Image (cartoon, rainbow over all chains, first blue to last red; front, side, top):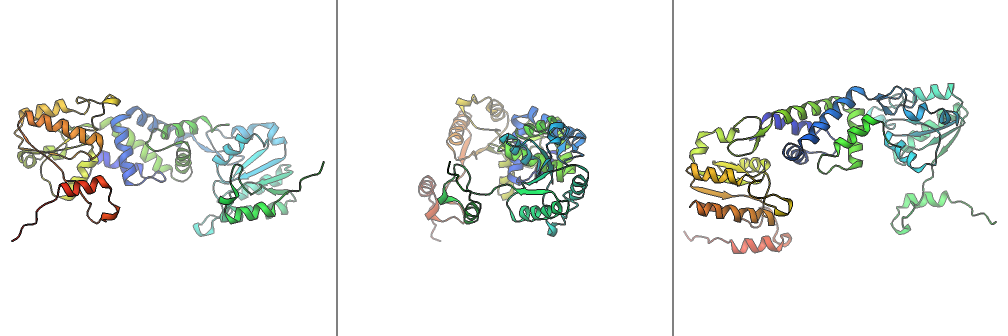
Length: 202
Length: 202
């Protein structure tokens, strides 16, 4: 026995969401239909609107409903000559929340992963190469994730930058603030030692 | 800094789903917009359709797009005189999958919870009382969850059934099949002992 066709279709459709299986989808469907119909309505409208209107920023490739995103439209940022390379739009938000960086971004929307058929063109490195050619960029900051794929992507972009003679840096890896040495993994601790800084005697 | 308004609205709308917080909602929004737009489209349509068309079965209160659900429309089941009381439509599906029960259902769509303002009328016990009056029901099987609220609800319905002089049973609680005694909690093991059955000498 199964649910009635319309409920069944809703459950199957909810399973397209990442991390949602049969049981969670059932729970979501019942919750929406039983207790929160206006929330479901709002979700349907928001999805439809976003799918119709959201595209990629023509400059940095992040998701936006405008042809150029707010950060790329900021001329102060474009004049800074700084370009930070990240994997996803969520990374941009995380970096903006630090208020430490006032330059432009380039969002790869993924990382190099040849086994999955994701090569340089799929993560927009052709567009990046064009920008390096045309704009006067003085520093590239590589802020891809410290995973195997993220590191490989960073190396690949560092090579590209070298060919355009642009100085390139990688964000620091080490012990997170508030973390305890005892619970930090070996690789991170290794990075923390190899990346140690001199304390200046004043 | 936040996402652009349409993306932000999608993230907020996804947070109405149970168990979805800010980070999961972001992940879902990016996944749908970046890799799975047709899935998002399908979800929007399924939600809209379900919200417009799905209502409650007039007989057993389960969620269905028809005025009477498939199980209640089955005259063989209605003639059986058996009525099983469950908390949610998912429970009906679980019981149907056992193929052990061929009677009707009554779906409470919740359980008694006075602190949350959920009294007898909110879980349809007025409709149930009417059915007990009008139909010739010979046995009520209480299959609410073995939680504090589920047990309280079962007791309340057992009282109601007693007033209508209908025999009432509660599903058995005990050690789950395939479980190991060592890992079963005290309450369940207590139920398993108090509910033990004689083995007939043949």
